[in-house]
Structures are given as structure tokens and as C-alpha cells.
Length: 149
Image 1 (cartoon, rainbow, N blue to C red):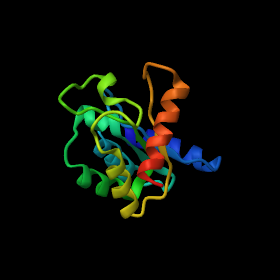
Image 2: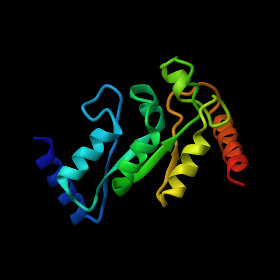
Image 3: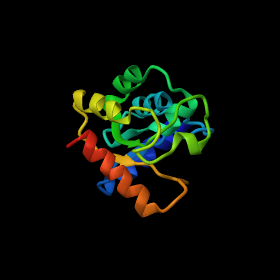
Image 4: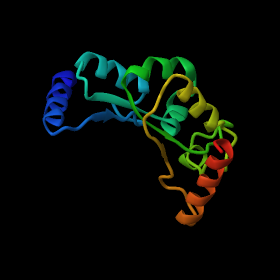
């Protein structure tokens, strides 16, 4: 049922010159990046791709990153990153932090994508992060500049 609906959506988007990226989200039918890849593959539309979202991957899976990225590459339109603490706490407060916080090596994830030839957008995910949004953005930008001078 989903595949024909996605085909129709992608066709309508293509007529308007747009692309569609499936966004894996914890607790939804497309919860994992491999779910999104499976649907994009079945729909087989050149403008239908997927998003890799670090915090959702950490919450629902957190395993086999290299395998997940490799499988997603042909359809990967967008990546969202954030700082994250991965000590077993699966709360959003632990899994969505500015880039200067948490021990998860988000820069290694970005380097892995670049090594695979990814050249799409890398977006900062700071949904629900407490504190001053300008300070959180500046801290994240500073951390990015340290990782990628």
C-alpha cells in the first residue's frame, strides 16, 4: 500500500521539480534507515531518497553504522547530526545535544560519508535542546570548525 502512494507522491513532486526524502523516525512505520531504503528501492523513483538521522538511529538501532550508510548511499539525500551521549540513556536529552557535547563521534560519521562520496546536506538537529538557541548554535558551529577546519 505504501509503495504506490510513494510512487504517486514522487511523481507529483518530480512534476514540480522537487525531491522527496523519507525520514526515519522512532516509533513510526519507517523507523529505521533500512526501512526507508527498502521503500525507496521498491518505489524506484529517481527523486525519492532517504534521510539518515543520527539521533533516531542511535535510539532505535545504534549498530552496524558502516553497513547502514553503505546501503543508504544510492538513496541518501540528507543527513542530520548532533552531539549525543551513548551511555545507555535513550532519552532525547541524551541523544540530541549541541555538537560540542556528548561522547559520540559525529565527526567520524561525517568523515565516513565524505569518504563514500556523499555531497548532500549535513544538517544540525537540535530539536528540544534546552538553553539559549543562539549559544547552542554557536557551540555547534565552533565544534564543526574544530573538526573540519
